Amino acid sequence: MEIGRNKYRLLNENLPLAYIQEALHQLKKDRIIERIWEKDHTVWSDRPEEIADRLGWLQSYHLPAESLREIQELVEQARSAGYTDALLVGMGGSSMAPEVFSRVFGAQDGWLELHVLDSTDPGAVLDMQKRLDPYKTLFIVSTKSGGTVETVSLMKYFYNTTVKAVGIENTGEHFIAITDPGSSLEKAARELNFRKIFLNNPHIGGRYSALSYFGLVPAALTGVDLEKLLQNAEAMAVTARTSKNPLEGGNTAAWLGAALGILGDRGRNKITLILSPPIQPFGAWIEQLIAESTGKDGKGLLPVDGETLAEPESYAFDRLFIYFRLDGNTVPDDKVLHLKDAGHPVIQLSLQDKYDLGGEFFRWMMATAVAGWAMDINPFDQPNVESAKILARDMVSAYRDRGELPAFKSDLEVDGISVYAGFGADDLAQVWRDFMLQANPGTDESKDRSYVAIQAYLKPNPETDRVLQVLRDTIQTRYRMAVTVGYGPRFLHSTGQLHKGDAGNGLFIQLTAAEPEDVAIPARAGIKQSSISFGVLKAAQALGDRQALLDAGRKVIRFHFDRDIKAAIEKLAGAVPRAGK
Image (tube, rainbow, N blue to C red):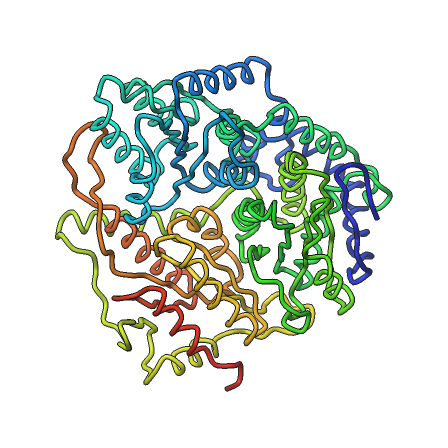
C-alpha cells in the first residue's frame, strides 16, 4: 500500500489487521484526531498537567515569518563574522534533532559545520576543545529548562576556554542560547552578553521540539533549507488532521500510532528500526521519542536502533520492524524481504529525499501521541527520569562534603575487569550465565520477553562503537533477544525513562572505566574555581542511575575497566555463552 509523497506500505499480512482496524474505528468514534488538534487533554488523562502545556508541537511546522527572519539574520551574522564551526551543547530533546541535521545533511559549502556534544566524559570534552578553533566557533547552549546539569557544565567550561582565547570582552559574541522564557539560562545569557537568545514556545516538550528553535536554528547554520523542510512537515500535518480511515489512504500517522499501540499490547513491543544508510542517524531521534513517551506506568515500547540486521531466525516473536527506505538507496531491501518472507511484521515508510524527514518528524510525533491513547498512557510526561538525577545530585553533594564517591566491593576481578553483580562467580562465563538466567523468554503474544540494555559510561568514539556492536551482536544472536546500546549520561535523557518505567523486563549491563585524564567544571562562567570535575559528575551519574534501577527492582550488572577498554569489551564478548550452555 503506497500513499502520497510520504508513504507507508505493508510488506506483508503478518500483522493482526483486524485488531488495528478495531482501534481505528474506536479512534474515529471517539473523535481522537479532532480532539488532539483541539488540544483536549482528556484524550490521555483527566488531569491536564503535563499535557495541556505540551501540545505546542502541533503548530511547530508553521514558523512565523518573523521567527524565520530572526534565524536567517543570525546565520548571516555568523557567516559574516567568519565562523566555520558551531558546537551545540545539550542533552536529550535539545541535542537529538540537531545531531540528525548534522549527520544527515552535513554542512553546505560556505556554511558552518555543526558538532554536538552531549557527554560529560572528560576525554570527549577535551577532544572537542582540541578540535575547534575558539576564534571561529559559535557555541549553542540548548536546554528547555535552562538548568540541565550537563548542559550548564559544558557551557561554563567552554565559556572559560573561549575567554582565554579571545578575551572576556569578546566571548559573549561567540555564544547563543536556546531555551524557554524565564529560564535560568535566559538570565545567565543576558548577564554574559550572549550574541543571541532564542526563546522557544514553552508549550513544546523537549522530545517534541525538532521543528522548533531547538532543531531549526542549528539546522539553518549548516545550510539546511528551513522552508523546504517545514513544507514537508506541513504536508504531513495536513494528512494527520483527517479522521478518514487510514487503511483507505488517509491519516498515515494515526494508522502508525494505532499499529504501534495495538501490536505492542500483543507482544510486538520491540520496535526495530531499519534505515537506509544516508538517514541512519534519524533512528536515534525516534528512539528517544518512543522510549521516553511510552515507557511508563508498567508499559512501554522498546525502540531498537542501530542493531546489525541479522537473519530472520535470529529474532524472536516480539519484533515489529519499521523500514525507512530512501529512494535510490536500497541496501537493506533483500534482508528486509527475508524478514517478511519468514513471517515477521514489517512496515515500510518511503522517502523521496532527505527533506522528507521534515514530514517524518511530524508523522512520528503524531503517531506517538496516538500510540499513547491506544496504550492508555500520557505520552508527554517523564515521571521516572528524576529518580536517577536526584541520586546523582546526592552523590555529588556527598563528594563535595567528603571528597570521594561511594565505593563498592567487587564480586570478581579478572584481567583488569571488576564485576559488580550481587552474586559470586569464578569467571566471566559464569557471570554471564547467571546474569542471563534472569531473563524472561516470554511466550507467543506475551509482553514480558526480556531485553538487554548496554549502558556505556565510556568515551564515545568509533573504536568503542565497534566493540560495543560486537558485544551487542553476540548477545542478540546467542539469546535471540533485543539489545540496545546507549552512551551515558546521554541515554538518561532518552531511554532512561523506559528503563525504570516499563514492566521491568530489562537486563542492564553498565560499563564504566577509569579516567585517564579529568577536567574541572568551573563553579561559574568566567571564574576558575571548581568543586567538581566532569569525571566525578559522570561517575556520580552512573552510580545514581544504577541505584535508581535497583530501587525500581531492575536487574543490573556493572563491569568496570581499569585498563584497555577495547580489549576489555572484546574479552566480555568472547565470554558470552550460548543460551542454555
